[in-house]
Image (tube, rainbow, N blue to C red; front, side, top):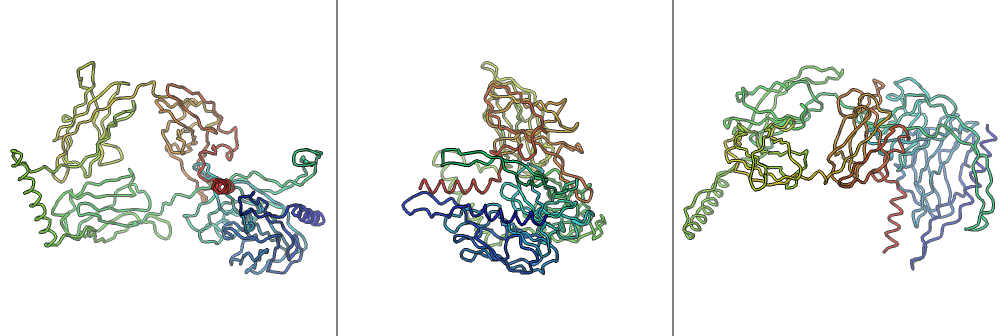
Length: 637
């Protein structure tokens, strides 16, 4: 093996020598230099054995710079003390701070951090290797890290190997070998010895090379990684000139496996229960924010007020991790400082839920107005009223002081979708709501006909009520609401409301039908727009996911194998050895036109995961694409 890798190092140096020198773009707008720096030499030499030097100097044929060395350059074995890495003219100088380990292969993976000083052309996938022992570990493995929830490539994530196969190694020991993902989510780990490994992904918040923080994003592979290599043939083309092929010859090369490891990263759900904060933004309400959902409401007891039937409790997200208490009684909300005890379940240091009681003092963040400020407001209001009276007298009208109404936001768009509904959203909870004061009519010829509807409180938002009706496509409707329809808990009625709208015609819509194969028995499909946002969700039934009444536009789709059947995507858990729920993308963006029906056949496992998500949906773009765009912009200028 040793002679083989010495020859490999020499071959690498020869290949590097074939790079042409960089040419600087001319000030008068000539062609840009697109040639990366060329490796010239180093101390120690590439692939050096029995090396004891902690200082590495690598020289190139032109002046260079380093782009984000702290993010892109990765050293294996990982260094506890951060090494010094800097560019110095035509050289890169690395000073290792940790003590060198005996009989160990060291690799310095620069990714594309090395660039020429003028145009920023990167030297891609450049790595440097030496050994403190008598042999060079030479295996290489590669793959990609994807966000498990949406298959986005993940940039800058640490990927590491453990030869210690105990489950605890990931949480207690630094990695043996490491790599880092590039802008395409791809990683390479070099200098790997033969053997068996576990592989992990880690966004290492505390830089200790192990999973020690519950907020760190992680990935793990269930199967063992066994590095190997094989001889392969590739076709090399020899050119007579830039247009004419001389010969095509078959060349032997060494290929390292595995080369397609796919890691799906996620952040575990935190179930540690604690009170994060409490606040009283205004006198009439206060809120509690918990770190996790609970099965029941906390027990609140007033210390300077009677809490019996004193509140209406709002859970804005539909969960019991954010609670807002609306105070019914003015005798309570006019108290400057509310004192109370709050009893709830709390996660202790042993990760057990135990009862806990906190004593709280909640002061409104709205500062009470001084007598001077109140007097100024009264004077201003009297002046405005006097001005309004004089204007009414001048116009020969009787002045009527304006009524203060309860604000309400009405959702009833002028062009209503056939599946949509009307919503009323209020600024405070309601004391009463009368559906008899709501009048919904449909225009039939020249007459208006009453329409049956359901008036129901929203299931997730305490401050919202909805009107549901069976709309007839293409027809006109009128909504009228009397001024006494809704009454808020603080004594105000809403004003009257009138809205006219028309329901869209069926021919204005399109339909997409997915015939799905390969999904689990519990699965659902999320229809996505051109920005990867969820438009609608349907379950997969008998291998079908059908979407009706879609507006024209661009669509894609994402399927989730819903292992626990709760209707949402769930992350994994390392301690339980549970992977995140599987996500698959339909590999095309569909252009849907009005009055069209599209039927799409979708085998969710026909393509590898990293090839499924359409490029136009990806938020993480390759760095080279960004640089090309910047260069094109400069050329236009």
